[in-house]
Image (tube, rainbow, N blue to C red; front, side):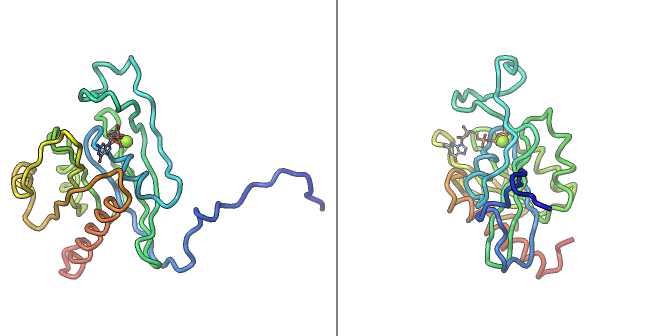
Length: 206
Ligand SMILES: Nc1nc2c(ncn2[C@@H]2O[C@H](COP(=O)(O)OP(=O)(O)OP(=O)(O)O)[C@@H](O)[C@H]2O)c(=O)[nH]1
Ligand SMILES: [Mg+2]
């Protein structure tokens, strides 16, 4: 049979293909309150073109969508972000960013399913938007690290003050980052992987 002339489905782009050496894939969720930089982080660090489900924040959202006085924030995640990064030749992380707005939180349960660990992004101007997220991770027993996304007008606090404000256990890593920078976002993921490794070594990983 001659298929010449029929439509063909293009194969995956070379950069989207998994490295042949990949042996293990791990699901990681990027969580945090509204507008803390989750989509930005998945986008900056992903080696494949990230999938985003952003919708424009419209006039209709005024009073519903909190844009915390930021004119630059014009879109919000309504379902999830998805990206991928090979941490080593053997280890691939699949990244799932959650929606930050409260009205989409019902999607979190599915997104947390099977996640080995999480990055909680925080914005020091609005620490309170990430409280609920931390509570939910603790409830579900998902290990996490906290990444302080540095916004230029965000107040800077000593790490230990942040630990107290967020009521975090002493072993939970807290790192600073700039979610727009690939290297910085990658460092956060490396911190999470080291933390998960130390939990696994001590037998604390469920
Ligand atoms: N200065 C600075 N701006 C950032 C940084 N990360 C994100 N932004 C900006 O902050 C805004 C919010 O970022 P998003 O990535 O959409 O945040 P989000 O957490 O995905 O937001 P939701 O999905 O609506 O909850 C965007 O305008 C980004 O350009 C950062 O590290 N520094
Ligand atoms: Mg988003």
